[in-house]
Length: 357
Image (cartoon, rainbow, N blue to C red):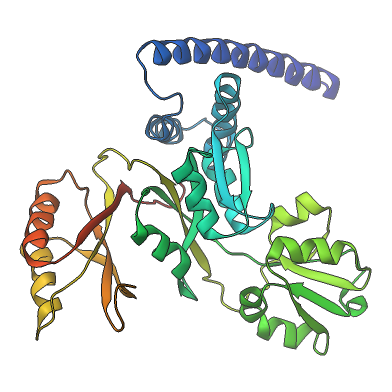
């Protein structure tokens, strides 16, 4: 078969795909009407996750398995936009790693709203200006994002889902090469995470702090001698070529992001739960509380303390545990905590992140 024949075959297949996409959009519209009649929400994150899991597990023959989720996430996002675009608040500006996490969760067709602060993301969801919010909560190198943790503890929203993204820093610039760079813009954390690479490859350049990696990209785009440490998404959005990829000093640099909503997720069988509790003053108080988890055979994957903000030197404890609030052993542990602790607050049960999921 000649090259022209092969190209005509590709065109024919693409036409078939477009026709099937039209059929899918039509059925998706019928689903939306059925949901409206039953007074169900238009967007169902758990149903979307189930569809993506099924398709990824089924595979597409020679089509790369890892691309199936990306392709179908955009198909589903576009179909949803025909009904009612889902409104998502994220920690902006556009081009940040949080923006990348939000796009991976909701696709390109969602209606995104930038918030200048993490508190702004939470407020948008609480007020109903956005159905969902996306915010960083923990970094593998820097630890917890305290503003997000404190906003969760304050209440009013729940964790609905989590996602972990590799924080792969890129050097972006319109300069022809490294020797032409005089200034590097980025936020303090990104500059710190690339300190050794900068010292080795472009020592002596001026380091300029910016409020975000996306703001750094904007600055570098207007500076012929400037470069930015930012994401590949920022390169795409601000038209800045990537001079070097993965310049972070530690290869294993990842951030955990959470989707927040006014309700948490139903049980899937592979879940996590986040709780916060306080303890009474006294010797061994925390140990006695933690025994409730051990007695229920529950594994804690994370524990940290935060100031209660009720009185000086008073702390509360935030834990991530394996299981869902509807699991029998988790229910038992939470009931026991309510007996032992002055305060217990459920902050969300949600599917555990699985790489590639």
